[in-house]
Length: 334
Image (cartoon, rainbow, N blue to C red):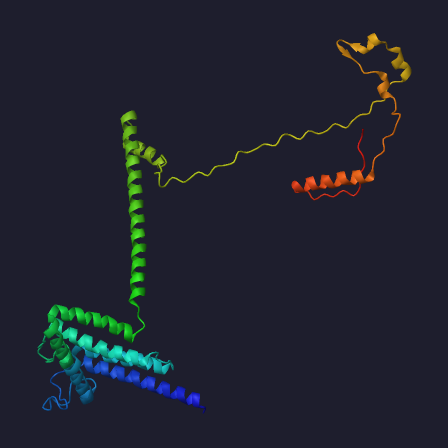
């Protein structure tokens, strides 16, 4: 068996022992009876003792109550926490600081119980609420701070002992309480707002019902049915915001280009027969026939000029998200 395995087994064994000790201590405190025979305290008590743990339990309970009073119930809790860490092999961080915090926690609880409740003398339990330790500390504090100042000092030391002995944070506690309080407040405000809106709708329906009865003299059932059919008015808070809707633009109808029909010019002989008087139609003079003659000179184009024009056309097309490219360029009609 390796060393790490042995150490883990020992740690688990100690954890189980601490669990058992905490349970025995708690049962002994809960079943305490002052009439039990206890070593060094009450040797003439009844035999056997009424304590569930027997003579050992009666002795542990009597000793705990006489020394710490009701603060003794913190003992099983401390043993259980230490046993939990031992059983799972968890290291207690800042062990000495937490030990000081636990000792301060016992002292603060015992002294506070002594100041708050004084001396209890019930029929079957004759011990001080804070034990001898709590009574001594309470007397020392009361001598210099009186009762009120002693209680304030003890409560302050109690908070400090909780911080030292645990990882509890009062800052996180107060932040969580503030957040929960804010959520509850918002929910309550929302419920009140909804209730007021329902009341407003009820009043509006009653007004509609009253007006309908006054105007038509109809029965109550008919008027109530009419009032319920009316849509409830929205308050300015409840009214939804209207988003601006852009105007709908209807595109103009596409105009289909009619295919150009090439008309064959009449023969030159027929055109020559028309006189200038026949070519005049009212105040409009028809163009001369010489416009139909073929051009005398053929215009030539530079290929580089055509390619430059094509590139400029492609650049203009990119501005309108057009990715077409020209493979060749030809001059248009002139």
